[in-house]
Image 1 (cartoon, rainbow, N blue to C red):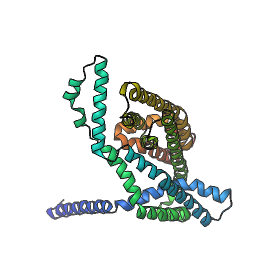
Image 2 (cartoon, rainbow, N blue to C red; image 1 turned 180 degrees about the vertical axis):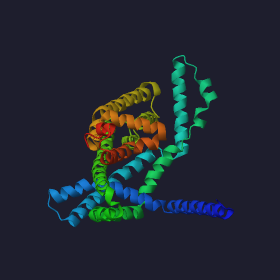
Image 3 (cartoon, rainbow, N blue to C red; image 1 turned 30 degrees about the vertical axis):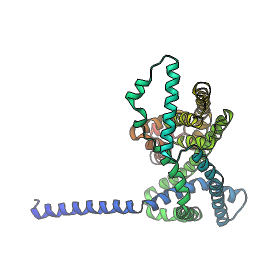
Length: 363
């Protein structure tokens, strides 16, 4: 029979448990920067593992030397990116007035006048409609300069974070076997083989996935640059860079990138005639971006990702679509890595399940 003392003790224990959870969450909030460093280091480790294995197996480097060589490649790549790309993006952003909200609003207002004049010349009365909608007052133009300023500001002030990430990544790569041994001591003996196999396969597949993601974004960036170069768009690097970054978000990102490219193309040619130059050029750019997406969606992306995570392109599409409905943009970004992890775990722990057999036959 429960007494008042037993009930009181139960309530106190529950309160104490909730307080501990709250303290733990607050602690994680305080060290969120460290958690981000760990996450970035883990991604770099997954990308670096194939490079490390190449140095060890093909070039016969010692493990420590291979680790240093892998880290040196990261350092050279990051340094080259900062020294070559960021100053260009910064200068082109200034030329495009993307770092100043007031300048964007002024350019948009001027563009609106040109669009209105063009529509009226074709007997379309849009002036009253534009006044009633008051479109320019409803658009938050801060997102463009805030996005660019965040990128440039982060690049300019992330020295400490970069040093921390590289330091952590070095030991993740160098002592990966030691970490495996440590994990062996923590996991129960009855599931040791399945868990270790899951970790090994997950590490392998995610390493290929992140390398594939870098390759896919690089291909898209180059194709965007070519399209903008063909049509003589000024500030092409900043436009191509922003649109390529948006491709990280599957399916929705390219659509936003196309709209952004159209707006920035118009703003880049704001001094030209709307009917004879701005409008045709923008249409050509949109057609070019559409062709890039056709190439990316039907060739480079399915081939890269289906090969990297051993999943059918339709499978990846459906998983990404479902994740988007359930968790929005964030869900779409993490859908493929998370789905890959779940597939590996399912194959190891439920190998006889018919559905899992079908989904994991290539793993």
